[in-house]
Amino acid sequence: MKSEKVDVLVIGAGPAGTVAASIINKAGYTVKIVEKLKFPRFVIGESLLPRCMEALEEAGFLDAVKEKGFQEKFGAKFVKNGKVCDYFFADQFTPGWSWTWQVPRGEFDKTLADTCEQMGIPVHYETTVTGITFNGSNSITTVEDINGNKSEIEARFIVDGSGYGRVIPRLFNMDRPSSLPPRKAFFTHVVDTKRTMDDEPNRITIIVHQKGIWIWVIPFSNGKTSVGFVGEPAFFKATEGTPEEQLRALLATEPYLRDRMKDVEFVFEPKTLESYSVSVSKFYGEGFVLTGNVTEFLDPVFSSGVTLATVSSQLAAHLVIKKLKGDAVDWEAEYTEPMMQGVNTFRSYIMAWYDGTLDTIFFADNQVADIKSMICSVLAGYVWDSNNPYVNDHEKALNKLAKMIKVRDALNA
Image 1 (cartoon, one colour):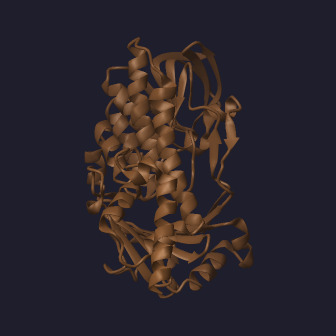
Image 2 (cartoon, rainbow, N blue to C red):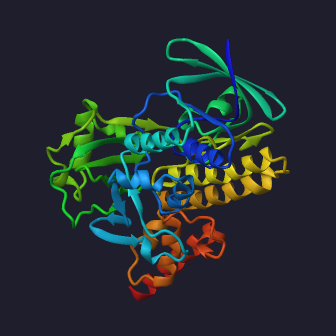
Image 3 (cartoon, rainbow, N blue to C red):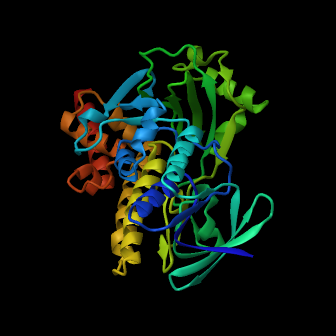
């Protein structure tokens, strides 16, 4: 069987894998990426957050992404019963990037992977990991290509950025149920001929369709728009017909989109992603670290997926480099704890979204600008800023604010 040696094997060629691979490669270590699928391929997570830009910049990807001319994104618009709440990243509390992109992920992810190859990092597509044996930090990974040819890769460390593939968690029985209830996403891309500058396109629009059910609208620079419903699986059982007939019927029930989406061309048959939230028992082991959606995927509502993917890989890459140099790494304190800070902050906002707490905050009259800027920072992905009370004490701060708004509105009624 063919065998090769590298310093670091990266599993997965999405944003998590490529960010880690590039940073480690820049430090002078040999890196190889194996990817189960052929790129480009479709995946959700099309609206990035400004915090991603720091990781993309360090990885050396910004110039290549800029050349693609993706839709620039400057904020998020929330809509409920015709009422609009806008958050502009330029107004955020935390210093940092004030814009990012909205991207068809197939093209975006391929751009990152192509850039890695230009850096001299081999990327092997349609290559499946079938087994891993660890000997301390060292490992031997068996892979199989699309033609059934098997080979072995010896590595000093593994970064698992395999996303929904969840390679190491599945091989070593590390998957755990999420604390979030099961939900379903039902979505497509449309040729958005009725789009206007008043509608967008420089921000994501999130529409409250009814309690617990919401819609995303993500315009791209190519004239197409991603649109999808998210909610409890039971909600979708009320519509019948083909997937296209079902989604058209749902769009017709939303006043904010009814005219715009009437008779639009669907780019592909609507897809479904269901019961997507998942967690793991630990984020690392002696010879590996998990990054991105492999650690914990929450919910698409605040576009946290790519942010957690790129930031976790950025952090993990530096710790892998530290370990390869022979320095001690406290993976719990230096990796798990900071990543859980981000995950838990996003989780509080996701739960507050579904239970109506954020409805009260987002659509309140006479909002306090300083508080709105702090919440804006979270929506921009800056969920590690401990100077922000809506990060540092996320759950209590949101509940207290919503309660204050309700009391104020009752007194003014």
